[in-house]
Length: 113
Length: 112
Image (cartoon, rainbow over all chains, first blue to last red; front, side, top):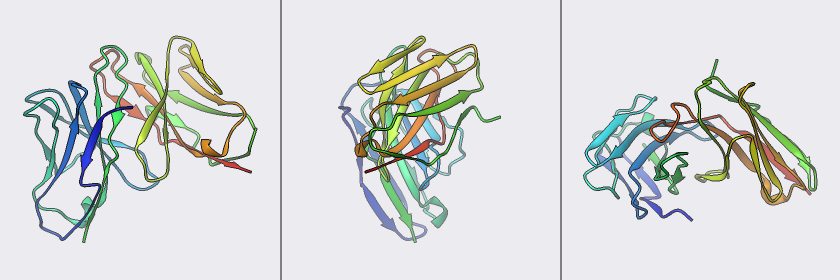
């Protein structure tokens, strides 16, 4: 079982607030990812990191930002939340050298009013 | 053409049935392939990695056809607990540096 954690699990917040979604993994994985998924829809990669001080934008444009100061920690920040940011945010990590299997955290369900 | 395409379903089957899901991918350079399972409002969980020409894990068999760029998942003797969405996933750039591309998923509902 993968050890990857996300907090909070659920967040309801008003428009304009700054929020940070936390993601931590205890497996020492170099690669970490953030996905966004709306109900019944496919996953979209919004950010990824291949190691400390490495961050890249994913396929889906997002107003969020990420940082990777420590291997185990990959937080996602929204400076000013809007209703269009309402979604589920899933963090994942991968440590396999060849096949790149990813293991997911339980997700944060964000609702912006 | 989408990079990873799956039949969206839903597949409604009785308990004990055998069900097969198909998936096609567009990037011939793809090197690794996976099936994930996602329950409603939960995170995706790795079900199987698909190696070389395919592999089996209990009631689940995954097949890979590189020439046709086609992956399948066969579930035998389906259980109520198999009800979920099954995601076909491809590592597009090959090797460890590629990112995963997720299909939209095929929904399976197993009925008593």
